Length: 173
Image (cartoon, rainbow, N blue to C red; front, side, top):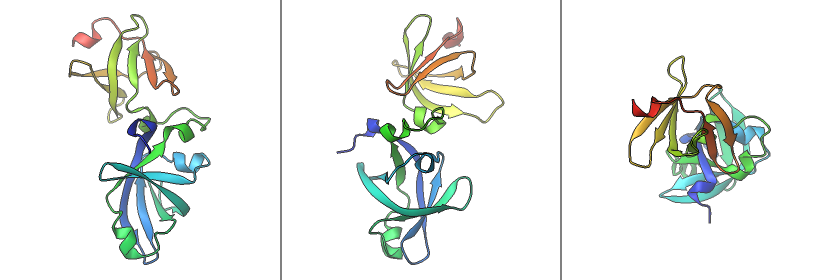
């Protein structure tokens, strides 16, 4: 059985394309193309189900037309519309590049100086010139932490940790 902590969200299934079971796949992370993966995982009513990829082709930097094994009609494809798509963390670790933004969501953020757990990374905000980490703290608060190279010391994909130098007083704002 696939566990939620073993995968991370990379996109969502869109509408069927044509009548032979192809689907529009909107993604935030193209890791499925960078590593040798045979399958993607769909969250179907809180059950993580692997779907093997027959083929895909890119339509844009954020959309691909995907054909899954045994999904051969428009009706079968339509049943998958709207489901979130996940990718196995173990396969993503084979990627030689730095982890993607989508991959680090859910990682634990730790203060490098105090070794104290700050919380879990909930989101990354790239909307402004300064990228920010949105972190859920253990006491239920949300804090914004600048995600600069000066502050991020380590991203450990194996342990799912982000170690950062947190400036004094930042968490009290």
